[in-house]
Length: 388
Image 1 (tube, rainbow, N blue to C red):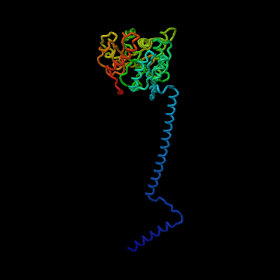
Image 2 (cartoon, helix red, strand yellow):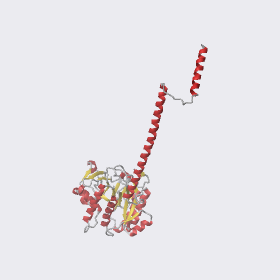
Image 3 (cartoon, one colour):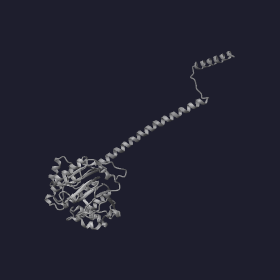
Image 4 (cartoon, rainbow, N blue to C red):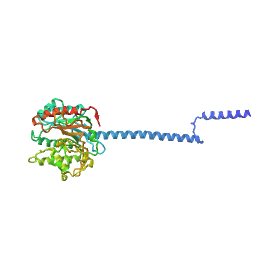
C-alpha cells in the first residue's frame, strides 16, 4: 500500500516537471469555478478604475466651467457699475438679482456746514462704517473735505445757495446712483448715529425697496390727509427697477413745482404729497389698529399724537415696497431746552437720531447742530458694538 502512494506522488512530480519544461507557453484554461470568479473580479476592477478616472475628468470640467462663470460675473460687475471702490461697498448679488451690487451713505454739505459734516463723517468712521461719502456743494467745502482725506464728491447745484435747489438735487443724485446700480442711504449731515448696523440688514430684506423714518407733522396737508409723514433727511433707497420708477415720479414732481421746469422743490413736501395722493402712487398701507392707535403724548404740539410703530406699504403704480422704521429706532423730535429735560431716556434700540430746535435763529443753526451731537450722546452714549 505504501509503495502505491509513493508511485502516485512520483508520477505527479514528473507530470508537473514536464509541463513547466515545455518550450511553448502554458495556456491557462478555466475549467473550474474558482478561475471564472477570478476573471469576473478582474473585469469589475477594470470597470471601476475607468469610472473613477472618468469622474475625475468630469469634476475638473465642472470646476473649469464654474471658474469661467465667476470670471464673467466679475467682468459684468465692473463694466456695468462704474464706481469708486473707496466710496462704496460691494455686496454679493443673490439669485433674484434684487440685492444691490454696491451702496453709499451720503450727506450733502456747503462750506457753511463743514464742521457739522466733519462730525457726521468722523462718527460714522468710528462706528465702523466705510461706505459713507460727503457730497460737497461748493469748491470751498470740497477743498476742506479733500484736505482731511475724506471720501468726497463735488456736486454742482442748479442754483447756488438755494435750499429748494439742494433738496431737489439730492433726489437727482439718488436717481443717478440708482441707475448705476448703487443703493443710497440718504442722510442729513446733522443726523446722529448711536451704533453700527450693517446695511446688509436692509439690503437683504427682500420684502422692502425703500425705508423711511417717521417725521413730525410737516407737511401739514399730507399729515392731515393720511395721519403720518416721512422725514426727507433719512431714507434708504435700494437700487432696482421699482425704485427707479419711484425716483422718476419724484423728479418729475420737483420740476413741476419749480420755476419754468427747473429742478427746484422741497423734497419732504414732494415726497409726502406723492404718498398721500392716491392717484399718484396708489399706496396700500399695511397698518393694524394697534399701530394706528399707538401714538406719542407730548407737551409740544408738533410732537403730540405721532405714530410710533413700524409698518409697511406698497405702491400699485411703481411696485416699490416701503418699510417705515419704528420711531425709537430712527428718532425724529425736538430738543427745545438746553438740557433736553423733556426727553429723559434714550429711545429703545436707537440707531440714529434727528433732533431739532425750531426756535434757533438761522445764523446760529450750525453751532446749535454741533452742540446737539454732544447733548444727544449724553442721552444715548455711542456703542462700538456692532448690531444686527
